[in-house]
Image 1 (cartoon, one colour):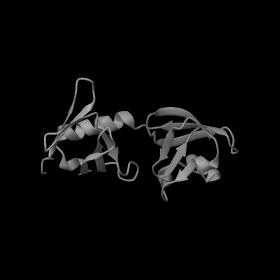
Image 2 (cartoon, rainbow, N blue to C red; image 1 turned 120 degrees about the vertical axis):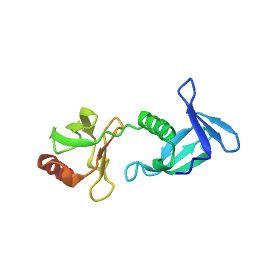
Image 3 (cartoon, rainbow, N blue to C red; image 1 turned 45 degrees about the horizontal axis):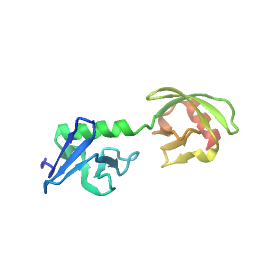
Image 4 (cartoon, rainbow, N blue to C red; image 1 turned 135 degrees about the vertical axis):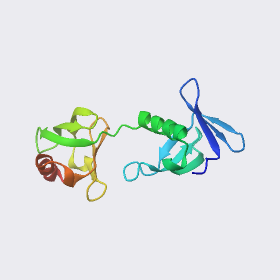
Length: 156
């Protein structure tokens, strides 16, 4: 592992501070995933408040553990995409409908406005948007239980 040509620390206000190889300091930098669903551990940009890319990280393995942990913490605090593990029931197979789901973040009720709010990302992944703008992920359609798959099939 080659050490990165920058340092990254958290200031007393909880914001990330980036210092480049040239000594230039940027406060309140934001990590951004290039492929948040498909490859969340690969391709992360550190971006300034002006929207300029300060550093590109191919993968967390090329970073010191402390820096990788800071970036993961920051990403976790900004990203909220619960993963649906089980669909208990839906109020109706016509939209709008209320879904009772179990996610990796706990139980939830989501309201599906229309079938167009279910987006297929690839053969196995779905992204479902509820009326509040929360995105729910179905990571692997084939691995879901029979009841959940049957409900999803009615909407796809």
